[in-house]
Image 1 (cartoon, one colour):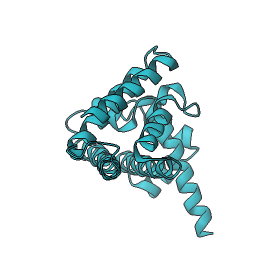
Image 2 (cartoon, one colour):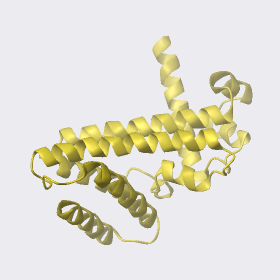
Image 3 (cartoon, helix red, strand yellow):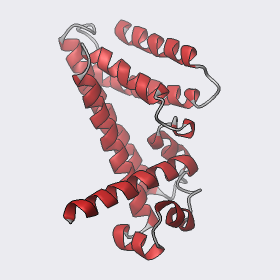
Image 4 (cartoon, one colour):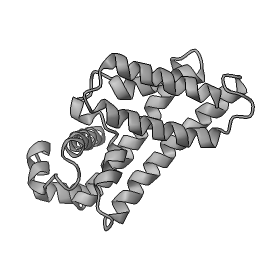
Length: 195
């Protein structure tokens, strides 16, 4: 029985993630959540306490999924940079995500939330920092394996790569074609290796 409850909670969070991704935090009402999640408001409040808490749970799970995906792509790759490039290709051009979800949920959250929503902004910032930290770990491994120069500042490169990915995903939401985006990803990794 405990597994079923956990599964249901995960399913609710997955559905809420898609809704918040499509409509943003401010654009999603409790009525939207009630309809999309097929839950009564009392059940949402009983499970999560508030819309804010549900959103924080969504942000946390989204960040964890990004970290897990980075690990998966590392396992399947011939080297750290190949795995990183495959991850970026996937989150930018992956076919299974709806087009409206191309923009990183964390970046979207930071750009849309008003300043008074500091708790939610901090949750998104924390998740971004965790992803950036994972980038740094991967880049350090790439440096050890001489895929990057011995003088490469991996912390700085992780921040730069995070910025590139956020910009690329925002650009991918425009009318950019797949071939053009693939060239841009190649350019990012050519530049990364030369730094």
